[in-house]
Image (cartoon, rainbow, N blue to C red; front, side):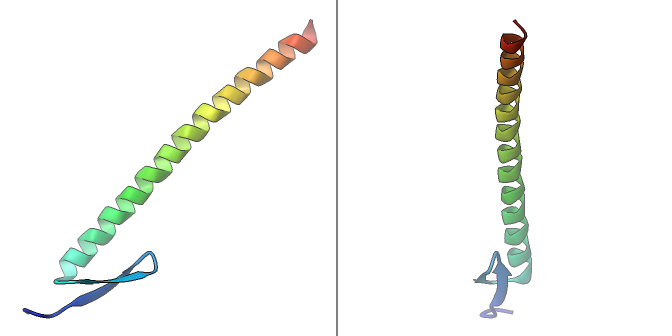
Length: 65
């Protein structure tokens, strides 16, 4: 239906789309981007944890001398 707008709330922001399918598609794209950011954060935390584990082992060796 030409001229009809579909309001769709994404992350607390209401956006207007020309069709409902466009709104749903954009919501899914944003959801995927959010998940990708979470994976990046997890990967960074794993690297940080590995560095902490290395430091912990070095301290144990130093104390054990």
